[in-house]
Length: 277
Image (cartoon, rainbow, N blue to C red; front, side, top):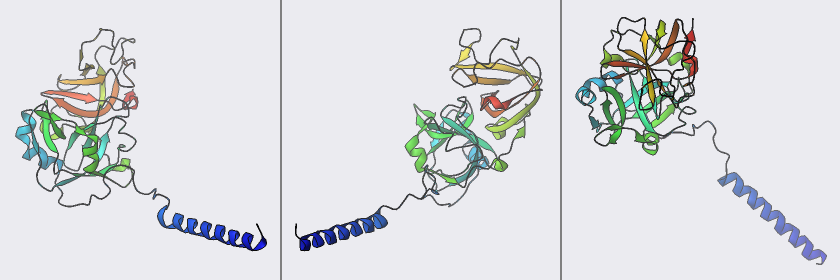
């Protein structure tokens, strides 16, 4: 290659590199890491309703193990109070606003990295269902004629994360067994100075050895020290703390107070929800 050709070749290479750099700048910008990698970021706030209003409007469906699709352009602005980090809330999260609380059924696992406790959510209700399982109010979709978990793709189209998790937004209520179940089911609660039935220094919360009757792979342990006896600690055998030895003395218990008909079921979220006195 003579000198003239070498110069022309060098000019062409430099021009090509300049063009490549220009394309990189114009079409391959680095991703905006401030955008949450979850949910529908195009969702904007419209007409808000409250959990209490939903429970009142759909009280019949909730009480009769029914469901109904929401057709109005309504939204909830809520805070996550419970997720699947500990494996005891399976394919669901608990939410609250300033009026009440409820469960959201989502057919997916590994929800907790995105739906952390304290995470505020904007939920578009149009097109999803509200109903009741054992009279526990729940958002989801229809499944075999009842309320069930919505597909993850459906959920992510109906939710937007608002800000970052903030524990200051989470309200924990002192549990009262005499509460109105319709109003308080789904709430994050604290039970103070109670004992758990079956504690002998060896028994664990949710054994699989047949020593405790299981319902849907969960053990129900009666909680003593309350004004009523219809309160159980419900623990899944698949939870990360299923083999935790039950303390023999008084404890404080944090958890989501769900209901199954007329029984309160306290769902611990993680092992850290059990405080030995």
